[in-house]
Image 1: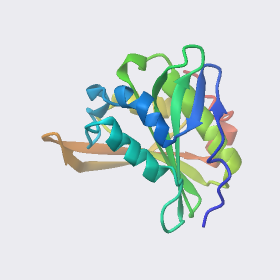
Image 2 (image 1 turned 120 degrees about the vertical axis):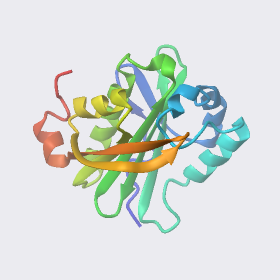
Image 3 (image 1 turned 135 degrees about the vertical axis):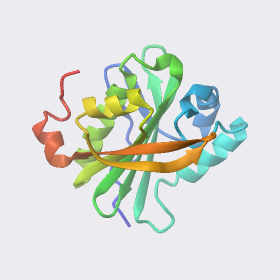
Image 4 (image 1 turned 120 degrees about the horizontal axis):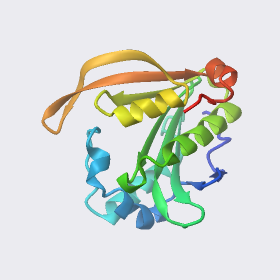
Length: 194
C-alpha cells in the first residue's frame, strides 16, 4: 500500500482553502457541481441529487483504491474571505511514482485565477510529499481554457489521441500533458509567467 502522507491536510493559498473531501461536502458542492457548463468537455453529467453526490464522496473518503496501489486525494475548494465553495480538485497518486490531476470549478469562477492557484498549491503538496517522477493531466482538445491553464503551470503536451472518447454526440480528441519533477523544480515550482 502507498504511504498516506498528504491526504488529510487542509491546504491553503492566498485566497483558497483546500479541504480534504468528505461526504458532508455534498451539501455545499451539489449546487456548484450542478453547473452544466462544467460538463461540456467531460464524459459525465451532473449527479441527479445530493444523496448521489454524498454516496460518491463516501466511496472517495477512504482515500485509496481497494487494492491499495493508488491514493485518491480529493479536495473541496472554498474561498477564504467569502466562505463559499467553488469546485473540487483531485489527484490520483500511483505506486509507480506518478500522479494524475483533475479539477472542476463552477463557471461563475472561471477566469479569476482560482484554478491556477489551487493547482499550484496541489502540485507543491504532491511533489513535496511523494517521490513523484511526474504529474499528468488529460484534457479535451476543445477545452482551450483548461489546456492553457496546464501550460501556464509548466505542463508540456506529450501526446494527442484522436477520438479518445465519444460522448454527448461527438468525438473527443484528447491531449495528454505532463509535468516532471525536474521541470517543476527548475521552473521555480511552476513559476512560469502568465
